[in-house]
Amino acid sequence: MSIFGAMNTAVSGLTAQSAEFANISNNVANSQTVGYKRVDTNFIDYLTTSTPQLDASSTVVARPDYINNVQGTITQTDNPLAMAISGQGFFPVSEATGTANGQAVFNPQPYYTRAGDFSLNNLGYLVNSAGQYLNGWSVNPTTGAVNQNALAPIQVSQAAYDPVATSQVDLAANLPATPTPGTPITSQVQVYDGLGNMQTVNLTWTQTSANNWSVDVNAPNATNGPDLGTAQVAFGPGSGNAVADGTIGSVTGGTGTVTTSSYSPNGTASLSFTANFGNGLQTIALNLGAYGASNGLTQYAGTSYTLNNLSQNGVPAGAFSNLSVDNSGNVIINYNNGQSKTIAQVPVVTFNAPNALQSQDGQAFTATQASGNPIANAAGSNGSGGLVTGATEGANVDISTEFSQLIVAQEAYSANTKTISTADQMMQSLLNLIQ
Image (cartoon, rainbow, N blue to C red; front, side, top):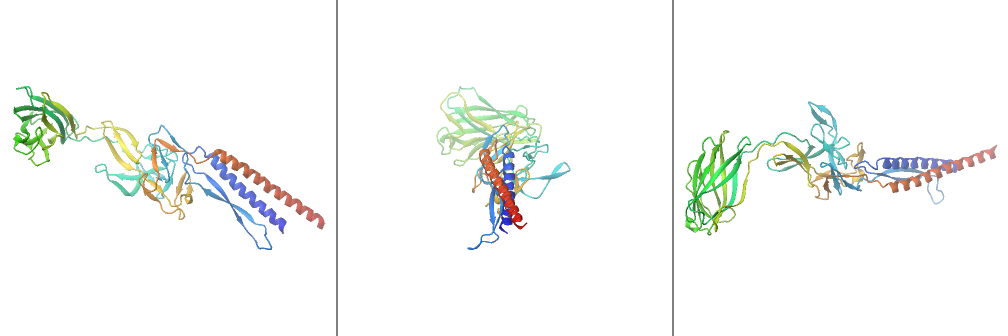
């Protein structure tokens, strides 16, 4: 009977509008939730009979319309570990199921989220406010190579930075072509021993004749010294090699622990010395630039020594200072000795159909057959979004739009109740005729 059909249709309308009301309610409630993605409502009409002669009562069903590919507003925060994705993609995250031997145990199910309000937890993991652990690619701390074959939760060690003994010193300076006669020139080099202690090495330069110098290497704290040896440095073509005036032509005559490099055009001009600062023998190469070039030690006009650059590769011990993340997704440990170490890189994961992802607790998603397989790329590459550090992404919910839809849903719900009451009145009238 058409009256019963009208009632059934109106009831389905009430159910559908109730579902829309629930979606709107969720959106409004999560309008301040980091990384939340709103759910709209689609209405689908299901027919019973529809022909040129008859259009029977149908039903309407509400289906959720997931809006995962629309970005929320990105806002700067005072959290240096927070990240937001500008563009498409998700952070890969894991969920912990407990701990074993003081370490977190993780659910093997991969999760994905836009909630990037990460911070360090008590175990050194980067965790967002929903308790999800940020995954990343590991980085070899020595070579800097990124292992893109596996994703794993990023754990930060706050262990001290081990000292590195100096093995090379780079010197760029100008020895005066006309120094004060009989007055040697002394310069100092600060190096680090195997325990990270700073040690002083004195270089004493004496002009023995025009364009020829002797350098004496002295380390006051060396147990095998302090006099470590000498070498002879000659400049210009008078060195016997075809080099320009004022550039190094030869480094020869090493004595004691000092050894010298042989000449080759544009080859490295250097000498090495060996000192024992109480931790065993330590060989240090003193790089003076290239033969025939002006990028290191030179002898040009002047009466005084001019230092242009002095650097060495030793490092003292350092304590953990802080953790930072750059816009490429590199997770960097910084130490109070001025050193830093990249331990991981955060990729951005994209899907062919992100709106088909399955919603989970805590603004997270899991992949489905409809969404396609996850594709992890470096931030800003191959269609993935870029990273904005020190920022979070808000919900992609517009309150004014939700309120407008709420009014429409309320009116539609009231209209359906009116349809039911009208159909009921018609049914009562029909029953009255029978009586």
